[in-house]
Image (cartoon, rainbow, N blue to C red; front, side):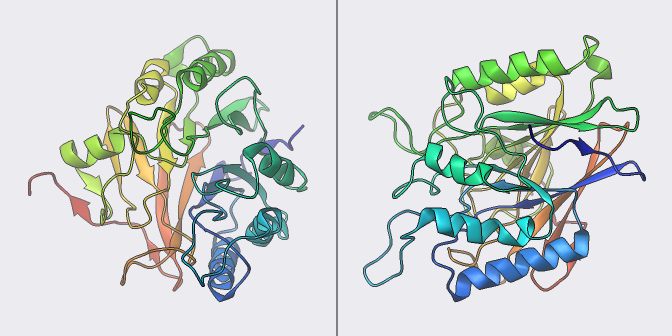
Length: 316
């Protein structure tokens, strides 16, 4: 069983989100990614780290470029900065983690060999690998917060539908059942829940186009072309107050849609595309015991902290 997570004595619980590290072979760019993670960890001292996919890159590389020839080794190296500090960590897989050389099941076995991971393989009958939930206990030893983790897949499973995969109906059903088990019957008294996945939901596009958002959008929202209803399920269950995705390396905004804050992480890895002037970094999330809200900010590679992101008003 994974180690129990608890709020600190000061009633806070802090999470660092690392996303899209794209570790390949331990070369110079990977080492920059490691240095960034170390800086964030030492400055923020989080209670939990969540890797939101594409921890490693096992996809196509141009002729002459280095490839990820040993995915298991690459993964161990990518999480070493966290593991060596004894910090608990969780992970969801992205579209590039298991493109070649290793399966999701095999990579989850690598995940679970680590002493400080709280990740789980999840139910075998569900789509994907790594659909699971974790509870954070409060000072009374009761559930004070919940985190849900979803495998958002790779590419669409249907030949006539291009683009990326989506969280499938059986995963959504699992979530609603899990929520009913964990949360009190009085949904208005429910404790806050956060959801983590790699590929953003279609609502990430909607929130940017319809609501005031905070942060940057330098590329299209690369979500699935099918909306399977994950966001609607979260609205109906009434527990999730924030979602956190990666995938789009030069988007880092967040916005509130119908009471749920849809957040991008800040891309962490150097061994992949970015944009000049858009520094690598991490998103930090802080829960406070007894509150359904959360604080969030960015810490960048140069050590700077961004608490107030630029405002985007649709149509302005």
